[in-house]
Every structure is written in C-alpha cells, then in structure tokens.
Length: 306
Image (tube, rainbow, N blue to C red; front, top):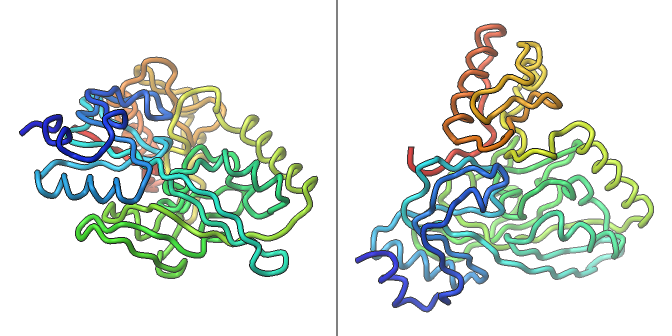
C-alpha cells in the first residue's frame, strides 16, 4: 500500500501532510531533492501515531527540525520526513531570581530569545542567533560564544522510536559532549525540555544579544545559504584556521564555495547541488590532511538517498 493510502486512514490532519516536497524549501542550505512525504507534527500524540504507522508498514522515517544543520541529497528522501513543530513556552519563577522554563522542541531559538529579553531572563543570549530549534540545538549540544545548551538544560523529554513511549531524563543522563549527545544516534525524538536561567538586567541582556548578532554579521557568511559551520572544531586545532592556511577560502566546486569570510563555512553561491557540497567537503578534508595530517569531521548531518 502506498504512503498516501496509509496516511489517508490515519487521524493526522490532511493539511499537515505534503507529498513530493522539494527539501530545498525546508533547509537553510536551500539544497535537496524531493521528500516522498513530509508531515508537520505539533503534538506528542501525533509523533506517536506516525511511529505506529511507520512500524506497522515498514516505512523509512527521517526527523528534521528547522533544517539548519543538514544537507539533503539531490535524490531526496524516501518514506516519511517528520518535521517536529511542537511549540510550548511556560516560564515559572520557582526560586528567587531563578526561572524554570518549559519549551517545545519545535520552538525556534531566535523566536524565544526576545521573550526572555522582555522578562529580563539572562543566560540564553548565546543561543539567540543560532538558526535552529530547541530540539536540534539539544541534539547536537549547539553552542556559541563560550556557552552550550548543556549549560542551561535541566531535563529533556523524548519518545523512543522503538517502543513509542515518552521518557524524561536529566542533563547528566543526556551525556552532552562537544556537538554531541545521546540523541545523536537518531533513536530518540526530542519533544520537550526544561531550562534553568537567571534574572538579569534588560539593558545588559540586550547589549549582549546585539554584540553577538554583530559578531555573526561581521564574521559569518549569513548573507548566503549554508548549514552553519560545516566542520567540527578539532581537539587540538581550529579547523577553520587550517582550511584558511591551505589557501581554500573562496575555493569553489559547482555552486558550492568555501566562504571567503569564514573558512569553516561551505556556502551555496547559487544553485549548488548536494553533490557539489559533498565533493567540496571531501576536497577540503583531503587538503587539510595532506598539509597538516589532521582529520576533520563534518558537523552537518548528511541525509537522504545517495
């Protein structure tokens, strides 16, 4: 039975389901072939129902958030792409000058940061300019300006793909590492989280957010589509520095280019294909290893049919 027929019998609202969707419309890289089926889910129950469907019908499942850290293949994605759009924002001041905040995994970092500013809640400024969702940021322990998600997250609620049940774990149990956590294995779907943040002064919070926004504008190629930083930082080296020292700034393959502004970013200069990006990433890795004997790893996730 085809996916369309299977979903026709489900309780998922038809306006949340799309077929043959160009994934370039759902990624910050603006690259990617068609998803066979894309479903936007807004509740935990909808996630559980989709899991039931894919288990019973042996349908491939891909989870995405804001699409800001992924490269989708030119051939697209088979099966169902589940776009997590679960949104929630509950702010409680349980202790003096301490806020406990519950957020949905589909909340965008850039959308909740101004709300914290209004309530003079500090500690989230570093995340304000990260173009992703809470779920994606926790999954990869996103960070900037010396802070990471692990510094502010208290608990994470997720659905296990295997048994479809909801679990909640502590910060420690999430095993946060540099750009990594237990959620990186794709077995768990983050649906909610609680964060602990402090009280601050509005002017200072605003000043810090502006400083970080200016930094991004000045140092990063935000004027071009990309998936953020392409490669992870090394344990004993700064990857972008090595790429720069290989003379690769501005190096281009097809529509993909090593940014002239920041060597750690591969950007879409216009109509870049996933194949262009993969070839360029491979070339950059080879050049860095040839010159410095350092192996560099991708920070972006590569998904789809290859």
